[in-house]
Amino acid sequence: MKVVINGRDQCGIIYDFATELKKRGHEVVTISDVSRFVHHEYDYPQGGFFGAYYYSSNPLGQRILSKLQRWIRAISDRAADAIDFGIRKKVLKGTDLYIQVWADVVHQEEVLKFVKQQGAKIAAVFLGSDVRDYRWFCQQYTLTDMEIPEYYLRVPRSAKLRFLRLQERHADAIFSVPDQMGLALRPYHHCQVPLHADEYEYDVPGREEPLVVHAPSAPAIKGSHLVEACLDRLREEGVKFEFRSVRDMPNSELRKLLTQADVLIDQLFLHGPGWLSFEAMLSGCAVATRYLTDSPECFRPPVVPVDPRNYYEPIKRLLTDKAWRLELAEKGRAYALKNNLVEKVVDNLLLKTTQGSNCEHDYHPSYLRDEWVPADDAQAAEINGFNDIVREERWYQETVAGRTRGALKF
Image (cartoon, rainbow, N blue to C red; front, side, top):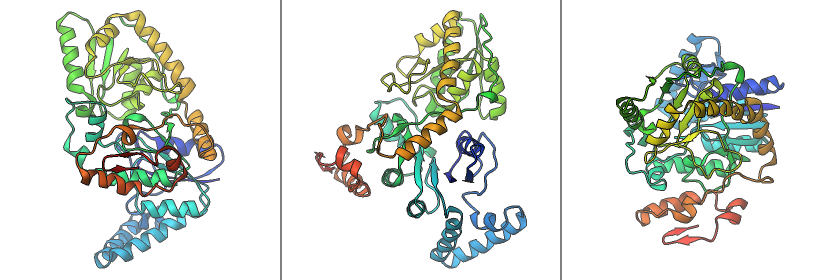
């Protein structure tokens, strides 16, 4: 089977999927730029595809062709796009399984249509800001004290809506989690975090004075100021612990730190547990993170739920109740081994994508359909317009169509 994985790698998921699928004897092609924290090599980059295709092992040739491509684009965008997509089609030809990871890719709609014409099955894997609109998120979860950095608002809601609706139209299966799916309409499956257990050293130190780690990728949206203020208060009250707050640590070093640690305090605003939390569980940490306690049966990890309104008491108990910490650490690793090994995650992705609509879904999004209130008729018209992309789909007719709320016409 020929598999193409296209997108932007986050936490090494493209590399992990590719490695596992190659082990099973499949031909795998990866298209991604290098991620921020985990550095792997991919077959093609998102940018510079022209040069990489013809001179994959010749940097000089790649630079020459990149200059040629820029020259062509300066004359005609249309000609440059046609040439670029023509080359990408050579790579996509014969695809049996197409996996889209993270955000919009070059020639997004054309790529989806082309691989569908090839008879490929399509899996869409969403991981966060690719589909999460942060203002919408704050409204949905009634967050008034979350400061959203400007760079998280650079991609307009309209772009995320278009990207999401195209995936909802063309994908055979979608994998995601609720807190990033406020814009969604189509039922979807839970996105399990895939991990290689042998890459993590498991140790439960069992200190009387625990080593606590906080390692936010984006402090403002993780609630770092609240976490660190809480720990300062606990220290002033006489609670004994060691604290390591780290930023931009390479993943290989972070894994070593998690093996040494007793506790990970992950995030207060966005819902987890995500990659970092599961890495901590495999490493022997007790984990505190925001968690939707009404999650379906497929997602019941043994974590300490915290949020901006309730974090002091749970964190205090976690730092002072050693027996509870040890219990959580042991249960956390057992849970991750049962649910998050990359082999099991890939098995589930292949099964659900093959079954398509002929299987049960973990989530049935309803916020946009039943609750969201547009600011004005123009905002409602924007939603109605993007819904036209999926309006004729069977799932839409069965689960969405016919509802009307003010200017919103489903």
